[in-house]
Image 1 (cartoon, helix red, strand yellow):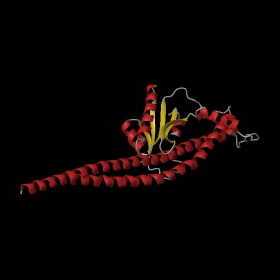
Image 2: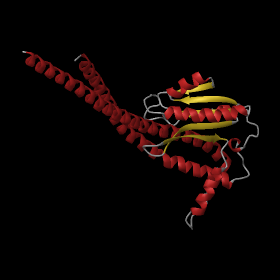
Image 3: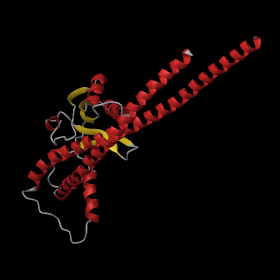
Image 4: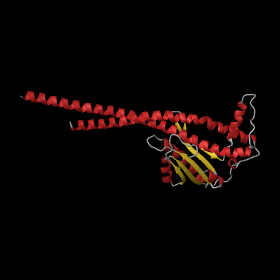
Length: 139
Length: 149
């Protein structure tokens, strides 16, 4: 996909995965990977404002251009990896919830059926008794 | 008593199903803990690299990498769709695909063509049916994914 973007065949790249909010909720998100959205700069700025006084800017070796070239590819890869891992966590959580509700439903179903079964049994017994009583009184 | 016998077999089969689902629930619960650990382990790195990239990009406004330039005309849109390999996990995949399709339709109306890259067998199956241009599909991502997929 990255190659396709480099060659200009793709103009935009999104990654779509389930975001893990907590065990009960997962939210599908569509995140723009390329071109890098401008809110990243805002993130960095935000960090800078929150930075402790006395912290300094790093000097990057070699120059920023070479660094960015390799770092951006690494960055995209890490974002995709994170998406895969997060989706994995979501999968298990969602499956757990689905199975839990399935188990609960099965329990309810069993309760209902047991009720029906007992009723049918009791009706049969009652009928038999009344038949016996009827037979006895006829004699 | 024929009905009673039928009901009894039905109860038996449901009980068996319940056993299976509760076993799967427990398996999923333990796997979830592992997956969550893996996720949490990756998060600081992803966040940090995001910060560093943002920082460098911020500090060197004169250099614009190809990845950072907004292309004014969007002719082709790519999606990397991350899905699960197995089913039985509620509406997880369905909701995800709905979000993709909604987004994709919006792009299509603007005249952009669509490319899909499917991670996970469910996404592969879905987009083969959906009729999008599926350029890559990979499934069976194990517990320990290599960084380079």
